Amino acid sequence: MKIYDTKTAPTPRRVRIFLAEKSIPMEYVEVDLQKGENLSKEMREKNPIGKIPILELDDGTCISESDAICAYFEALQPEPFLFGESALEKGQVAMWQRQVEFGLFMQVGMCFQHTTGYFKDRMKPIKEYGVEAGINAAKFLKLLNRQLEQNQFIAGDKFSIADITAMCSIDFARVIDVRVKDEYTALQAWYDKVSARPSAKA
Amino acid sequence: MKIYDTKTAPTPRRVRIFLAEKSIPMEYVEVDLQKGENLSKEMREKNPIGKIPILELDDGTCISESDAICAYFEALQPEPFLFGESALEKGQVAMWQRQVEFGLFMQVGMCFQHTTGYFKDRMKPIKEYGVEAGINAAKFLKLLNRQLEQNQFIAGDKFSIADITAMCSIDFARVIDVRVKDEYTALQAWYDKVSARPSAKA
Image (cartoon, rainbow over all chains, first blue to last red):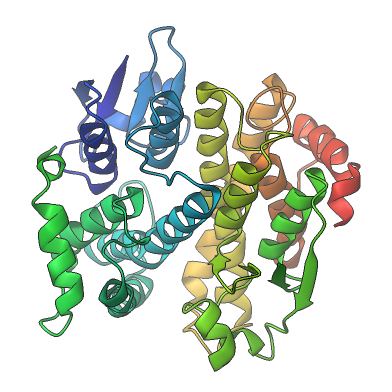
């Protein structure tokens, strides 16, 4: 099996970190997003919506969406549990994963795409919306800091996929100049801790 | 346990249908979104981002986000499997759930919020972005039709949470006047089939 990947993009990085945490080896095939290699006929057959990453199994079956690729590997090799172990943990991890994705990851991505025009050949950037998304992203960091004042990791006392998503979001947020404020000491301490895990280099 | 719910909103409807499919009884507490009851101090303690639905367990623990509440009940009572049974099914359901959420459900919601100003007391509507989101939603229906030309249900040959999300999206899309075109016969046949399930009335 292999994963069609883009080293510099924040979304596929989440999968690389997830697999590193589970010590699952993988073959990665680099796809140049900026050149639009992901939009070729061949790639559209693997994922009609033209996004990266895509996991291709040995029989040619493809699974796209970072979160879905991670769900596949979590089912295949549950430990270490990154989606939670008990029903309650699974619910709490899914809740935080979702809130971080909508409240931070997506806001950063939308701010980037709509204010820089990076993908203007394939979408219509609306600057005013991008600016608003950036404001939302900055606001969400305050909420995350509050959560981390009382919890070791984002979804509670164990490292999970929500930590991976949040770390990738914060690293990517540099491109829109949204950073962890000095006063967010709990968030910064958490960030330093998760960034020091070997998986963060994946 | 109980769920804070809003009968007329598309997101919590997904949870009601999910629980009906699993025959899990539930106490629902109605929250008036338009009046902003979800933004009260009491509700913010249950879910800081002020969204509905929220599952409250008997010990007071809260899980918000529709998808997360469903993940909790899937872990608690796996059958009938609505997130897939095998690893491959889990991956495929997660992929379609995600694509339907981003490509359809969210686009419909953003079009509604940004073009009507329904929540203008709590967000900044940007009409141009709303219009674009509506165009994206309409485009996604074409992709769904193609998938349903070759599959009985959205994620393959079994009913799943992706079907619930897609059906709720299509019903909600009436408010932005995006409808299944006559030529999308596979999508319409699927829609009629899933809408006829008793759970659709939940």
